[in-house]
Image (cartoon, rainbow, N blue to C red; front, side, top):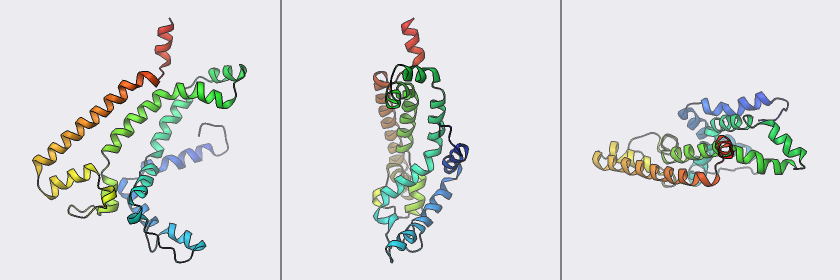
Amino acid sequence: MNQAVKGRDFFRTLYYLPSVIPVVAVARIWMIFLDTNNGLLNGILSLFRPGTAIRWLSDYALPACTAISVWGGLGAGMVIFLAGLQSIPQELEEAALIDGANKLRVFRHVTIPLMTPIIFFQLVMALINSLQTFALPMIVYGGGAMHGAVAREVYLYVINTYRHIFAFQRFGYGTALLWLMSIVIMGLTAIVFRTARYWVYYEAEARGGAA
């Protein structure tokens, strides 16, 4: 995505496209794709093994949900990482190459350290978003129904909270669960921030310290 290759803009668009598709549409697309009887994936596998009818959405609920989430969120992360790569001064990489470093060493000692602020930001956002995952598993495995059964593998914390509040009318208990989740998110985020000083490199701070 950051190299001068033919069709680069096309592939950038292709990778980013899932990020602009609504989550309901993403869920429906993958439900059709992974359908046991008429799904495209089983259809392709049937070309090599006739009669294939793997129940992807039931027998592999967690891996399927994870794959759908990664596919849907890949584009936004790509844009942020691409912006970070393009902000790296080209002269630093060229200087390392002139000093005799190969591309692997340049990536290890120049690219990754300068990308650590981006990695840190993505880590924090991914941590918060993962703990708040709700819509996708609810649509795919619960049918979006308030009282519908959700596959146990993807019966996530927020889904449990939602059912206690809206299905069982336990408003006080559900609110307590939300507060608990907020405290856990803040605690984990604080831990990540505390560890940042050991591995996140800020070029401006380094220059200030050197001065």
